[in-house]
Image (tube, rainbow, N blue to C red; front, side, top):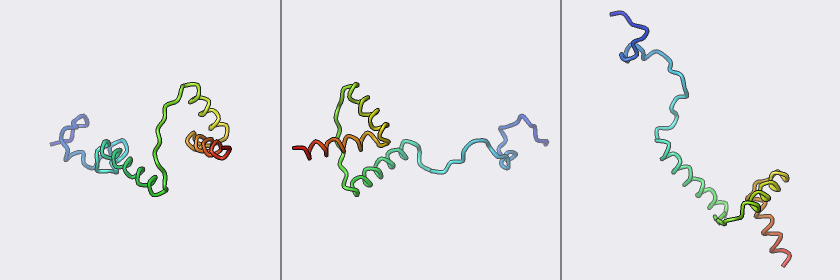
Amino acid sequence: MAKEAADKITPDLFQAEKRPGRPRTNPLPREQQLRLNKRRQLQRDKAKGLRRVELKLADELYNALTEQAEAQGISRSTLIENLIMKGMRTK
């Protein structure tokens, strides 16, 4: 039986063919990968002595913090931490 070029159903005839795309590097589904990565991130933060704090800001303040952080070349989180430390020193 000859191999038809358009026949992609018979897998044994196409095992040697390279398929386009990135090979699968992680056996876990993406959802589990994300959960595991988040858990590892929390463990790294805890080992560094970091604690999570959440707050809500007005859009104007958020944008101003983002612009200032970009101008200084630091992350917004680092900028907020610096501002809090500076405010605590002045008291």
